[in-house]
Amino acid sequence: MKQHFFNRETTTINKDVVVKSKRDGVFNDRDVAICKFLFKHKFATLNQINTVIEAQGFNPIKEEKARSLCQNRLINKFTFAEDTEKVNFDKKDIEVIYCMDLGGRYLLEQYETSVDASSWLTGRNAYSKDFVSKILMANEVYIKLASTMKDRLLSFNILKEVRMGKDAIQVDFDFNLRTGDSVRYYIGNFFKEEDIFELFNQKSLVLESLVVTNGWKKYSMNNESTEPALFFIGENESVALSLAEKLHDCGFNLNNKDRYSTFGRILKNNLYDKETFLKYESNGIQKGFKLTKISNFTPEGNE
Image 1 (spheres, rainbow, N blue to C red):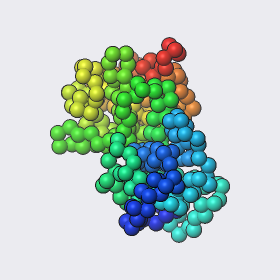
Image 2 (image 1 turned 180 degrees about the vertical axis):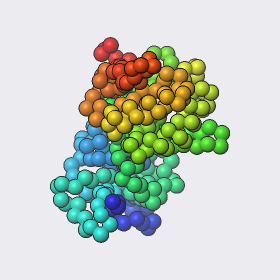
Image 3 (image 1 turned 90 degrees about the vertical axis):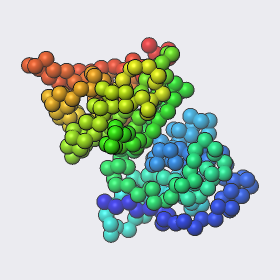
Image 4 (image 1 turned 120 degrees about the vertical axis):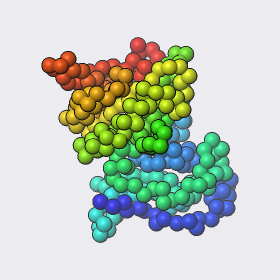
C-alpha cells in the first residue's frame, strides 16, 4: 500500500502570499491552530482535528473547509491505496488522513512563536501505513488525556527518540503529567504481532536501562526518584499477552512499572476506566492479565 497525496510534494510555495493572506483575513487563527496541531502530531483524521480545535474554543471545520485548506496548501491529505490505483478523494468510503503542507510551515513561522517549523519539509509526511496508524492511535491517547487532565498534561510527544549511551530507540509517545505536587513521566509503544521481535530485543533493553538507571530523567519533568511507567499497547489481547510473557519470563527488570492495553481498549474506554489497562501477574503456576486502574488519570471530581 502506498500513500496517495492530494497535493504533490513541492518547495515552491510563495511565502509572502501566505503571510499576506493571514494578514488580510483569508486565513485565521483557527487555521494556525490546525497547522500547529498537525506540525506537532504529524497526522490526524478530520475528527481528531476538530476535537482538538473545539477544545481550544474554535468551531469545527467541515470537509469543504478542509479541502480549501488543502487547495491553499496550508495542509495536505492522503490515503493508502495500491501503487497503480487512481484515487478519488471525493469518494465517501476512503480513509482520509491530514498532514501539514508547506504553506502551513510559513504560517507557523510568521504567526506561531511557540513552535519552530523553520526546517520542516513536505518530505517528512512520507510514512508507512503501520507508522501512520500508530500516530493516529497516539492522537487518541493525547485527546483523551487533554480532555480530562487539562493543564495537568505538561507535555506530549509523538515519535520521540530516546537514548541510552550509544543505543537509540523511537518510542511512539511520551508525556509528563502533574499529579498533586509531583510530575509523573510515561512512555508508550503500540505494537502488532510482527513488532514483538523488535520490541523484545532492542526496545526493551533500552527501556529497561532507562527504568533501572537515572537515564529517564533527561526526558522527564519529574525531579523526584519515581521511575516512568511503561505502556505496551497491542493490536489485541493475545498479542499484548505474548509480549508480557516474554518480558517477564526472560527477567526484564521494569520495576513493576509495565502496563498493557489494546487498541480496542484505548479507543473504547476512558483512560481512567478500570477496563482500559492491564497488569501482568504470575505466581509460577498461573499467569495472565488483571484489570488495573491508573488513578493518576482520574479527572478531578471523579475520584
